Amino acid sequence: MKSKLTIIKIGGNIINDENQLIGFLSDFSQVEGYKILVHGGGKRATEMASSLGLEPKMIGGRRITDAANLEIVTMVYAGLLNKNITAQLQKHNCNAIGLSGADANCIKAHKRIVREIDYGFAGDVDKVNNDTIKAFLDNDITPVFCAITHDKNGQILNTNADTIASEIAKAMSRDFQVELVYCFEKNGVMMNIDDENSVIEKINKEKYQQLKQENIIADGMLPKLENCFDALQNGVDKVLIGNPDIIKNKNQKFTTLSI
Image 1 (cartoon, helix red, strand yellow):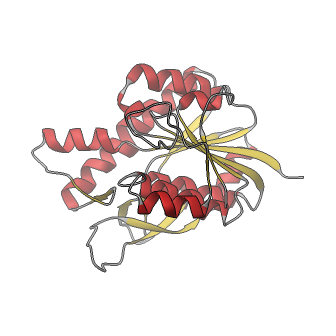
Image 2 (cartoon, rainbow, N blue to C red; image 1 turned 120 degrees about the vertical axis):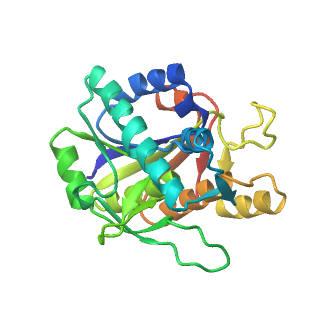
Image 3 (cartoon, rainbow, N blue to C red; image 1 turned 90 degrees about the vertical axis):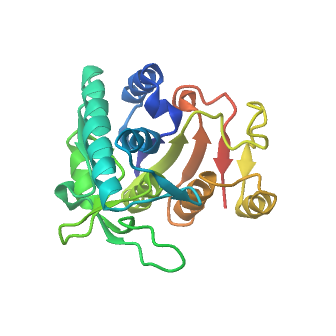
């Protein structure tokens, strides 16, 4: 029987709120068994870009990454956030290693092909090096991935953190029973974004299409849900969406995805 692996992606306002982030990392360090953390940081990168006079552009919940913004996201994701998160986990005796996709050739990607929209230096994942990641886990080292990949030709690429979490989950499902958890500031996928009690507790592919047509699921939730279903269709055992308390108290409301 495969060992369980919990992959948790953290993002949203929690990354920007120091107290919430510290509390989450304390709880994450207590998750039993094998675990991997994937973090975003788009809001922090947007703030940094704005302070430098750069205007971030978003289309359909995805960032347009020109050369100048690529420098910003690399500094914020792979530097400031990744190393602060790793240091906090060490404080809680979780032996973490901060990684981008370029480190140890963990995640290879290609620059997104221009069709209707040019996303700039955005990366779409080609391969996750599951053997290398498994070697970290086998040595009781917890990988902490930021949203940066590379193309094996020296080019760094900005890759959606939800996608990175999904792609890692799919790759690691060859060796583990994988539970993928997306944590952000909401209690789950909401029927009404202004009503914290309107959590949609179960969503299958058919329900997702309906909610999308009704514009209940839109913007940044679209790529998140697409990644959830992609993971479920490619070997991942379970996908959950909720606030950070989901990892320590699963009796609360949250959203479970199924196919």
